Length: 307
Image (tube, rainbow, N blue to C red):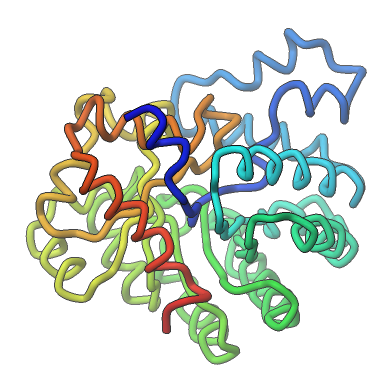
């Protein structure tokens, strides 16, 4: 089935631009850094270590041209994997935190995506631990570009330091502008974090793996057709699950919860979407028919095609 993984038309719904920078590209952007220093920042022991390294990598992006380059390289890789559709997450909250001008940066990535064979839409992501003001600013900037390729708003970062309830007014505002809503939840936080994201109006849940601990939540996700954006390698690498074999993707699927396979931060987690599909079969026993259904979910739950 190796050929199937590669040739299967696929969609990415949970993919961070800044987490897709290959070490070689980062060295191109920052030639003063040694390969060893770069590789060191692609290794970490836990989720907090990952967040620190993610911020370190993001600090190397200094100009719109830098963002254009990483977008071009990412889209070339996606096209080679037969990824037909992608909703790419731009860490707008980090860009604002660095006091960068988001306008020219977004124009640069938008130009690159417009020339790609991959259909691309953008999700602007705020950062939980940066507070309500950061996420509100991100929401406003996203709303201003809703007719120029931006399709949604999300929040990522530390669930414990930025409870979803803090952002209720921001999400209400975003929904009123027509933005679609997602949220990282239930990655390191428990099922209560997923419930809180749903109360915000999140239409998809980024990760959501801790939902497995709450049978009532599982039924709610199933009955309301709310998909989880699953990233297996990500959860293993950050320690969100104890081991690959302990990942709940199979149990979530068997409980009837809609799932979509994604890479999250493919360069940081040393993976590709093809590899995530391979893991689903090799480790978790998904059949070819089930795999095709999961691939179809990537298109079915795309924000540009659902309402």
